[in-house]
Length: 102
Length: 241
Image (cartoon, rainbow over all chains, first blue to last red; front, side, top):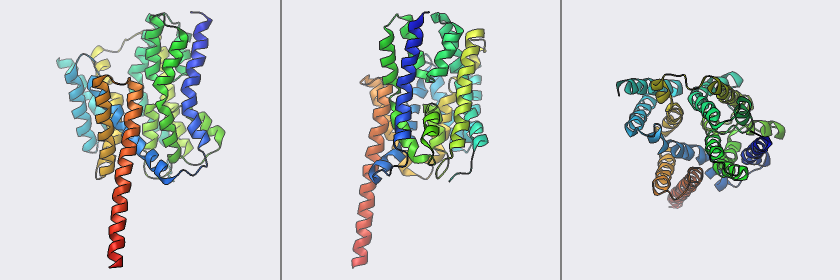
């Protein structure tokens, strides 16, 4: 592969970095209107909802049951207080068993 | 402010590292089959550090698509981080601009989720640094490993580990949902909207996540500020009587 590849990497790096850096540096020390800051505080929970669903169902593109079992396992373990580590490792264990059986 | 510092950050970040492991490994392998050298593959992970757009870039490179289009595509996929870092700014401790400019590089869906749901109150820069270093290290190292050894992990384990990041998202979300209807509403509204965009094919994934998130955050905020106003008015009415 030739030099165009590294120019492309430079471009990809720039357009990825800029949306990450502008808000953090520009907004530092600025007081936002309460409504705006209220919306921004909601973002983490909203984005988690959107990141999880529906992508979790398609973790294995060809096998919807895999995603469904994974979803149920993760929800159950997290709900019972498994914590992040318990939920991640527990869900992997459940699906490892499922994958071995299928 | 939170007391958790660098070490606690590394510990939280290790869950992301586990989740990145199979994805980075597969990325390294795919990069190899696409014809990238190990330096080119690892270089992309070092400088770009954005999972989804790196995968898309590979398939576009394989399709001999114009590099400019690949860059544009990367921008569209990653523009949602604008929203995340704006939100993260409300959560982080005040800090000098150059330090924020440095850790901004490491804000991904996963590091953002872990940092921004970390306890009540502001988060220390050192905690964020720990989370990010762990995640970034895993991403870069396992890209290289994947390129060298290929997908040597047993298939059933590979399959099972593909769920890791989603399980982590669930584990971050569910405890906050307990006893907090606002959080439940935020997550369900965004999930429903994102599902709608996904199944109708109305928006591509990057845009769909951004639009669903923003719409849900605004919608729920409006509902709650109205409800707050009604309660305040009712309380004021009683005082007057």
